[in-house]
Image 1 (cartoon, rainbow, N blue to C red):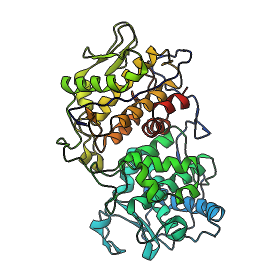
Image 2: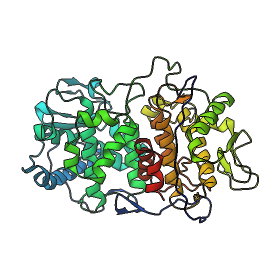
Image 3: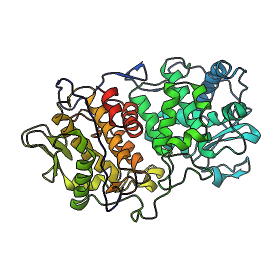
Image 4: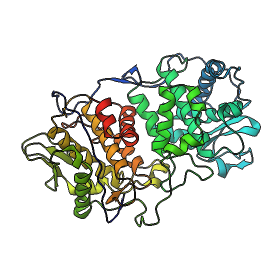
Length: 475
């Protein structure tokens, strides 16, 4: 986040309904995921899945290659079915497949050497080749995020092979920007995962709760670093951008993905360089001063609600006479958001990207300043809703709150704001939303919505469509 000297006001409108209650600590499981039921089981390769009949150069007998080859066979079956339906021609299989170990193999393919392709998977159009690093990338993905992360990355690279076959039908030519190609490929991956989630895959099954959470986490992992421009060659997008495209494909179909063009991307992409005035390069400390600025920003932003917003007080993060959700809690009896400043400051430490990429635990454990601020915003939003007699302890409350955090983020995102989001801040919110105990997407009792897919979608809905959409979608 970055700070400015002036403030803006944005009007938030909410709708009142009746109240209910729940036991503290449970995940909320109401609703569905894009029309599919919420399911819980271990996602991955099906027991008894067929052995793929594919020729893969340099393939090994490792678990990662077994997953990768099954993923290629599976996504090939998906496109063999969908390509004629959406695009009117038969799908031609990819010509070459290559597995390599960047820690031991000497690679010279598609003009790239071992150093170029380490920790990578890619599609090479001139050779019509899909390749993957089984030495570093796939094991890291599988160990950190589960086997469906491997399927996600291979499904994405196969999406580029689909683009190569579509050409003009997907608007792809030599002038097409990298970010458009990457958004299409992420969207194609989402359409493929919908097919798996519907139970149509011979090889894999994925739950719409923990399984899709693995996918969202892997997309977060392979995001671009904050401050990169979407106009740069090689830009893949922020986690916010990449999950948007994936969810678009999951909720619609591959034809919609092929329609993604530069105008669409320009209208919504969040990847941008740091502002020259952003001295902290996206990070400010979480302390009394910045929490005071947050209080002012929230009071002005929610002024149109017509109720008294809660005061943010540094009193340990727990409510003496009510339910506590530290490090920030909304206390209805005093209309305050009580915070544990030390815990929020630790949460607000920058994400250790070097540790993340090496598969190590971050030394500080921080998720970034915006993750900390957004947790406080979520509790403030609870207070506003209580003032309007909106229920804050039912199945929709957590998602509505995440949506309101997104709406507030967009409302302060212009010149003159007292606090203004920096590049990477929305990704920090996604990092928090993917935590098992997400406070941003939790009701007043700390019950988070069960699914990372739904949490991220709620944040994005508020960001793009405003607070009115929050009360309409999550009444």
